[in-house]
Length: 141
Ligand code: FES
Image (tube, rainbow, N blue to C red; front, side):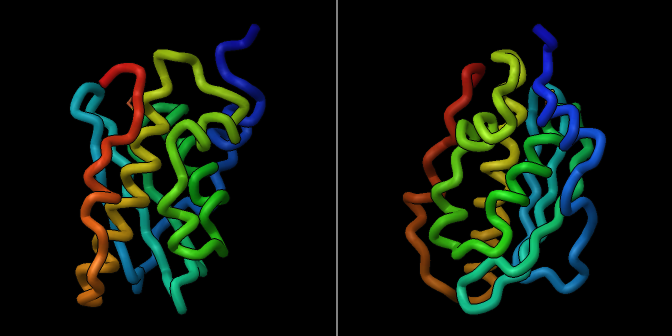
C-alpha cells in the first residue's frame, strides 16, 4: 500500500485555501517543536460564521495536506463547529495518515483553535478557556 492516500497527495499537490487574509479577524500560528514545522491559519469571521480561511504551512506533506483539508472542513461553518474539529477528523477526511505522521494533523487542529482565541481576544469576547486547554490527541505526544 502507498504510504499516502490519494487524498493526501491531492491536497499536498493542490492545496486548497493557500495564502494570507490581509484583514483577517483571527490569526493563529503553531509549531511542532519536534520537527520545527510551522502552520499559520487566517480566519475571516462574520456573524459567528467562518466566511473565509487561508493557511500558510512550512512543513511536511502531511502538514500541508492536513491544513488544506482542515480549511475545507471549516469554511462556511459556524465557529461552534470549527471548535469541534479534531485532528483525527482531519486525518480521517484525508483517508488516513501513516501512524508516524498523525502528529502533523495536530497542527491543523491547534492552528484553528489558536486563530479563534486570537479572534475572541481581539474582540473582547469571553470564551471558555477549558475548551482550548485540551491538547489535541496525538500518537507521539
Ligand atoms: Fe512536522 Fe509533519 S513532520 S508536521
